[in-house]
Length: 72
Image (cartoon, rainbow, N blue to C red; front, top):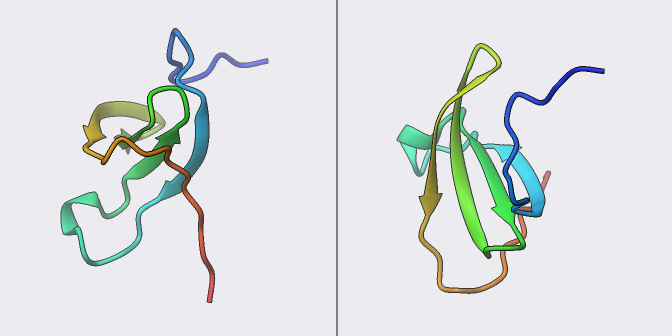
């Protein structure tokens, strides 16, 4: 068993993870997006070489967040 690279205490109740691959927000390219149920927020994580270098909260409208990957 290996310890996690990052964890939140108390838990943020992650409800989805996906790397951003779009072109609309160029600074987000390759960053990991995490939706949370507990605090109803989206977090943007910058990861380098299996380490979380930085994370920031993305403002929302106070609604529950779900991240879905849609493939066409």
